[in-house]
Length: 295
Image (cartoon, rainbow, N blue to C red; front, side, top):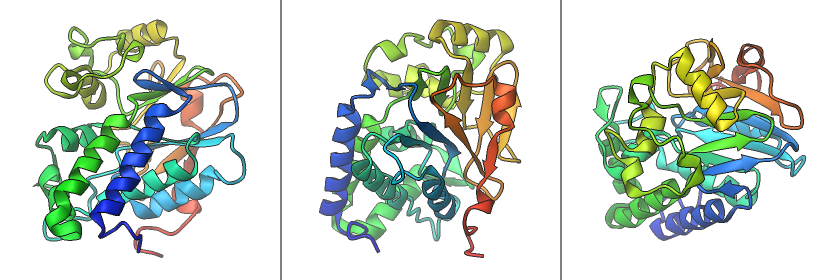
Protein backbone atom coordinates (compact mmCIF):
# COMPACT_ATOMS: atom_id res chain seq x y z
CA UNK A 1 0.00 0.00 0.00
CA UNK A 2 1.35 3.40 -0.93
CA UNK A 3 1.70 5.67 2.11
CA UNK A 4 -0.33 8.36 0.32
CA UNK A 5 -3.23 6.04 -0.55
CA UNK A 6 -5.29 7.14 2.46
CA UNK A 7 -3.38 10.25 3.55
CA UNK A 8 -4.74 13.32 1.77
CA UNK A 9 -1.84 15.57 2.79
CA UNK A 10 0.76 13.10 1.51
CA UNK A 11 -1.23 12.58 -1.70
CA UNK A 12 -1.55 16.32 -2.23
CA UNK A 13 2.17 16.90 -1.60
CA UNK A 14 3.01 14.19 -4.12
CA UNK A 15 0.78 15.54 -6.90
CA UNK A 16 1.66 19.19 -6.30
CA UNK A 17 5.39 18.44 -6.36
CA UNK A 18 4.97 16.46 -9.57
CA UNK A 19 2.97 19.35 -11.04
CA UNK A 20 5.84 21.77 -10.35
CA UNK A 21 8.29 19.42 -12.02
CA UNK A 22 6.09 19.16 -15.12
CA UNK A 23 5.76 22.93 -15.40
CA UNK A 24 9.47 23.58 -14.78
CA UNK A 25 10.85 20.84 -17.04
CA UNK A 26 13.58 22.08 -19.41
CA UNK A 27 11.71 20.19 -22.14
CA UNK A 28 8.55 22.22 -21.54
CA UNK A 29 7.77 24.59 -24.39
CA UNK A 30 4.61 26.54 -23.52
CA UNK A 31 1.69 24.06 -23.73
CA UNK A 32 3.78 21.13 -25.02
CA UNK A 33 6.87 19.09 -24.26
CA UNK A 34 9.59 19.19 -26.91
CA UNK A 35 11.94 16.20 -27.02
CA UNK A 36 15.27 16.33 -28.89
CA UNK A 37 16.65 13.66 -31.21
CA UNK A 38 18.16 11.72 -28.33
CA UNK A 39 17.37 8.38 -26.75
CA UNK A 40 14.23 6.31 -27.10
CA UNK A 41 10.60 6.86 -26.21
CA UNK A 42 7.93 4.36 -25.19
CA UNK A 43 4.54 5.66 -26.35
CA UNK A 44 1.30 4.47 -24.79
CA UNK A 45 -2.33 4.99 -25.63
CA UNK A 46 -5.21 5.35 -23.16
CA UNK A 47 -4.49 3.66 -19.81
CA UNK A 48 -7.84 4.01 -17.96
CA UNK A 49 -6.53 2.64 -14.65
CA UNK A 50 -5.25 -0.65 -16.07
CA UNK A 51 -2.64 -1.27 -13.38
CA UNK A 52 -1.34 -4.52 -14.88
CA UNK A 53 -0.65 -2.81 -18.18
CA UNK A 54 0.92 0.15 -16.38
CA UNK A 55 3.34 -2.23 -14.66
CA UNK A 56 4.19 -3.76 -18.03
CA UNK A 57 4.75 -0.32 -19.55
CA UNK A 58 7.12 0.68 -16.75
CA UNK A 59 9.15 -2.51 -17.22
CA UNK A 60 9.40 -1.94 -20.97
CA UNK A 61 10.34 1.71 -20.57
CA UNK A 62 13.45 0.65 -18.59
CA UNK A 63 13.83 4.12 -17.13
CA UNK A 64 16.56 2.95 -14.73
CA UNK A 65 18.73 1.65 -17.56
CA UNK A 66 19.38 5.01 -19.18
CA UNK A 67 18.43 8.64 -18.56
CA UNK A 68 17.74 8.77 -22.30
CA UNK A 69 14.80 6.37 -22.00
CA UNK A 70 11.43 8.10 -21.66
CA UNK A 71 7.72 7.29 -21.62
CA UNK A 72 4.49 9.12 -22.43
CA UNK A 73 1.21 8.40 -20.59
CA UNK A 74 -2.31 9.65 -21.16
CA UNK A 75 -5.92 9.06 -20.05
CA UNK A 76 -4.85 7.58 -16.72
CA UNK A 77 -8.15 7.83 -14.84
CA UNK A 78 -11.77 6.62 -15.05
CA UNK A 79 -11.26 2.90 -15.41
CA UNK A 80 -13.60 -0.03 -15.87
CA UNK A 81 -13.11 -1.36 -12.36
CA UNK A 82 -15.50 0.85 -10.38
CA UNK A 83 -17.08 -1.09 -7.50
CA UNK A 84 -20.39 0.15 -6.08
CA UNK A 85 -19.93 3.42 -7.95
CA UNK A 86 -16.45 4.01 -6.51
CA UNK A 87 -13.60 4.66 -8.96
CA UNK A 88 -10.19 4.33 -7.31
CA UNK A 89 -8.19 5.51 -10.32
CA UNK A 90 -6.74 8.39 -8.29
CA UNK A 91 -4.14 5.78 -7.35
CA UNK A 92 -2.87 5.61 -10.93
CA UNK A 93 -2.38 9.37 -10.84
CA UNK A 94 -0.35 8.86 -7.68
CA UNK A 95 1.80 6.13 -9.20
CA UNK A 96 2.55 8.23 -12.28
CA UNK A 97 3.28 11.26 -10.08
CA UNK A 98 5.81 9.10 -8.19
CA UNK A 99 7.42 8.22 -11.52
CA UNK A 100 7.61 11.92 -12.43
CA UNK A 101 9.44 12.60 -9.16
CA UNK A 102 11.83 9.71 -9.65
CA UNK A 103 12.45 10.36 -13.36
CA UNK A 104 11.56 14.03 -13.87
CA UNK A 105 13.00 14.31 -17.40
CA UNK A 106 11.79 10.92 -18.56
CA UNK A 107 8.09 10.64 -17.65
CA UNK A 108 5.57 12.72 -19.57
CA UNK A 109 1.84 12.49 -18.73
CA UNK A 110 -0.25 14.48 -21.22
CA UNK A 111 -3.78 15.87 -21.14
CA UNK A 112 -6.74 13.74 -22.20
CA UNK A 113 -10.47 14.34 -22.26
CA UNK A 114 -11.20 12.32 -19.11
CA UNK A 115 -8.61 14.26 -17.12
CA UNK A 116 -10.02 17.55 -18.42
CA UNK A 117 -13.56 16.41 -17.57
CA UNK A 118 -12.50 15.61 -14.00
CA UNK A 119 -10.61 18.87 -13.65
CA UNK A 120 -13.43 21.04 -15.02
CA UNK A 121 -16.36 19.07 -13.56
CA UNK A 122 -17.71 18.17 -17.01
CA UNK A 123 -20.11 15.17 -16.97
CA UNK A 124 -18.65 12.20 -18.82
CA UNK A 125 -19.76 8.57 -18.83
CA UNK A 126 -17.91 5.27 -19.02
CA UNK A 127 -19.66 1.97 -18.48
CA UNK A 128 -23.01 3.72 -17.98
CA UNK A 129 -21.94 5.76 -14.95
CA UNK A 130 -20.84 9.37 -14.53
CA UNK A 131 -17.07 9.00 -14.31
CA UNK A 132 -16.55 12.29 -12.49
CA UNK A 133 -18.97 11.31 -9.74
CA UNK A 134 -17.40 7.86 -9.42
CA UNK A 135 -13.92 9.40 -9.17
CA UNK A 136 -15.17 11.79 -6.47
CA UNK A 137 -16.58 8.80 -4.60
CA UNK A 138 -13.16 7.19 -4.76
CA UNK A 139 -11.55 10.23 -3.16
CA UNK A 140 -14.19 10.23 -0.42
CA UNK A 141 -13.69 6.49 0.13
CA UNK A 142 -9.93 6.98 0.54
CA UNK A 143 -9.65 10.37 2.25
CA UNK A 144 -12.98 11.00 3.97
CA UNK A 145 -13.36 14.56 5.21
CA UNK A 146 -10.10 15.54 3.49
CA UNK A 147 -11.27 14.47 0.03
CA UNK A 148 -11.36 18.11 -1.11
CA UNK A 149 -7.64 18.48 -0.33
CA UNK A 150 -6.93 15.52 -2.58
CA UNK A 151 -9.30 16.80 -5.28
CA UNK A 152 -7.54 20.17 -5.40
CA UNK A 153 -4.20 18.40 -5.88
CA UNK A 154 -5.66 16.32 -8.71
CA UNK A 155 -6.66 19.54 -10.46
CA UNK A 156 -3.19 21.01 -9.95
CA UNK A 157 -1.53 17.91 -11.42
CA UNK A 158 -3.85 17.79 -14.42
CA UNK A 159 -3.48 21.50 -15.13
CA UNK A 160 0.31 21.09 -15.23
CA UNK A 161 0.18 18.42 -17.95
CA UNK A 162 1.14 19.42 -21.51
CA UNK A 163 -1.31 19.02 -24.37
CA UNK A 164 1.21 17.08 -26.49
CA UNK A 165 4.73 15.71 -26.76
CA UNK A 166 6.42 17.01 -29.91
CA UNK A 167 9.56 15.19 -30.98
CA UNK A 168 12.28 16.69 -33.13
CA UNK A 169 12.30 13.49 -35.20
CA UNK A 170 8.86 14.35 -36.66
CA UNK A 171 6.57 12.47 -34.24
CA UNK A 172 3.80 14.16 -32.28
CA UNK A 173 1.93 12.37 -29.49
CA UNK A 174 -1.36 13.76 -28.22
CA UNK A 175 -4.55 12.25 -26.86
CA UNK A 176 -6.35 13.14 -30.07
CA UNK A 177 -6.69 15.93 -32.63
CA UNK A 178 -9.64 18.24 -33.24
CA UNK A 179 -12.38 16.87 -35.44
CA UNK A 180 -12.34 18.19 -38.97
CA UNK A 181 -15.70 19.91 -38.43
CA UNK A 182 -14.33 21.75 -35.38
CA UNK A 183 -11.31 23.29 -37.06
CA UNK A 184 -13.12 26.63 -37.46
CA UNK A 185 -12.93 27.09 -33.66
CA UNK A 186 -9.55 25.48 -33.00
CA UNK A 187 -6.46 27.62 -32.38
CA UNK A 188 -3.69 25.93 -34.38
CA UNK A 189 -1.18 28.17 -32.56
CA UNK A 190 -1.92 26.39 -29.29
CA UNK A 191 1.71 25.25 -28.96
CA UNK A 192 2.95 28.82 -29.08
CA UNK A 193 1.25 29.82 -25.82
CA UNK A 194 0.23 28.61 -22.40
CA UNK A 195 -3.25 27.18 -21.87
CA UNK A 196 -6.03 29.38 -20.49
CA UNK A 197 -9.11 28.33 -18.52
CA UNK A 198 -11.32 28.74 -21.58
CA UNK A 199 -9.17 26.24 -23.50
CA UNK A 200 -10.49 23.45 -21.27
CA UNK A 201 -14.20 24.10 -21.72
CA UNK A 202 -16.54 22.93 -24.46
CA UNK A 203 -17.82 23.31 -26.96
CA UNK A 204 -15.02 25.34 -28.51
CA UNK A 205 -12.03 25.45 -26.12
CA UNK A 206 -8.91 24.39 -27.98
CA UNK A 207 -7.67 21.86 -25.38
CA UNK A 208 -11.20 20.47 -25.20
CA UNK A 209 -11.38 20.12 -28.98
CA UNK A 210 -7.94 18.57 -29.22
CA UNK A 211 -8.69 15.85 -26.68
CA UNK A 212 -12.24 15.04 -27.85
CA UNK A 213 -11.81 15.02 -31.62
CA UNK A 214 -12.68 12.14 -33.93
CA UNK A 215 -13.49 12.03 -37.67
CA UNK A 216 -10.26 13.46 -39.03
CA UNK A 217 -10.17 14.03 -42.77
CA UNK A 218 -7.22 13.32 -45.03
CA UNK A 219 -6.93 17.00 -45.95
CA UNK A 220 -7.12 18.13 -42.32
CA UNK A 221 -4.36 15.75 -41.23
CA UNK A 222 -2.13 16.94 -44.04
CA UNK A 223 -2.83 20.57 -43.15
CA UNK A 224 -1.97 20.09 -39.46
CA UNK A 225 1.15 18.09 -40.32
CA UNK A 226 2.34 20.88 -42.59
CA UNK A 227 1.54 23.66 -40.13
CA UNK A 228 3.13 21.89 -37.15
CA UNK A 229 6.03 20.27 -39.03
CA UNK A 230 4.89 16.76 -38.09
CA UNK A 231 5.42 13.62 -40.13
CA UNK A 232 3.42 11.16 -38.01
CA UNK A 233 0.67 11.69 -35.43
CA UNK A 234 0.24 9.17 -32.62
CA UNK A 235 -3.01 9.40 -30.63
CA UNK A 236 -5.40 7.43 -28.43
CA UNK A 237 -9.05 8.26 -27.69
CA UNK A 238 -10.59 6.06 -30.38
CA UNK A 239 -11.11 2.36 -29.77
CA UNK A 240 -8.68 0.05 -31.54
CA UNK A 241 -9.78 -3.57 -30.87
CA UNK A 242 -6.34 -4.95 -31.78
CA UNK A 243 -4.56 -2.23 -29.82
CA UNK A 244 -3.35 -0.27 -32.82
CA UNK A 245 -4.74 1.10 -36.09
CA UNK A 246 -3.40 3.08 -39.03
CA UNK A 247 -5.44 5.88 -40.57
CA UNK A 248 -4.20 7.45 -43.80
CA UNK A 249 -2.30 9.53 -44.43
CA UNK A 250 -0.32 10.02 -41.19
CA UNK A 251 -2.26 8.91 -38.09
CA UNK A 252 -1.71 5.98 -35.71
CA UNK A 253 -4.29 5.17 -33.01
CA UNK A 254 -2.94 3.33 -29.97
CA UNK A 255 -4.79 1.69 -27.04
CA UNK A 256 -3.07 0.44 -23.88
CA UNK A 257 -6.08 -0.13 -21.64
CA UNK A 258 -7.40 -3.54 -22.66
CA UNK A 259 -6.20 -7.13 -23.06
CA UNK A 260 -4.97 -6.45 -26.60
CA UNK A 261 -3.29 -3.24 -25.46
CA UNK A 262 -0.10 -2.20 -27.22
CA UNK A 263 2.68 0.31 -26.98
CA UNK A 264 5.26 1.55 -29.50
CA UNK A 265 8.99 2.02 -28.93
CA UNK A 266 10.36 4.96 -30.90
CA UNK A 267 14.01 5.68 -31.63
CA UNK A 268 14.15 9.44 -31.19
CA UNK A 269 17.59 9.61 -32.82
CA UNK A 270 16.14 8.56 -36.16
CA UNK A 271 13.49 10.34 -38.22
CA UNK A 272 10.12 8.86 -37.35
CA UNK A 273 8.81 6.44 -39.99
CA UNK A 274 5.56 7.06 -41.81
CA UNK A 275 2.37 6.13 -39.98
CA UNK A 276 1.80 2.87 -41.87
CA UNK A 277 5.27 1.65 -40.90
CA UNK A 278 4.98 2.84 -37.30
CA UNK A 279 1.65 1.04 -36.89
CA UNK A 280 3.43 -2.26 -37.63
CA UNK A 281 5.78 -1.77 -34.69
CA UNK A 282 3.27 -2.19 -31.88
CA UNK A 283 4.38 -4.27 -28.88
CA UNK A 284 1.79 -6.50 -27.21
CA UNK A 285 1.84 -5.89 -23.46
CA UNK A 286 0.45 -9.33 -22.70
CA UNK A 287 3.91 -10.67 -23.55
CA UNK A 288 5.66 -8.62 -20.89
CA UNK A 289 3.69 -9.14 -17.72
CA UNK A 290 0.58 -10.50 -16.00
CA UNK A 291 -2.90 -9.79 -17.18
CA UNK A 292 -5.26 -7.77 -15.02
CA UNK A 293 -6.59 -10.90 -13.30
CA UNK A 294 -3.02 -11.85 -12.35
CA UNK A 295 -2.73 -14.89 -14.63
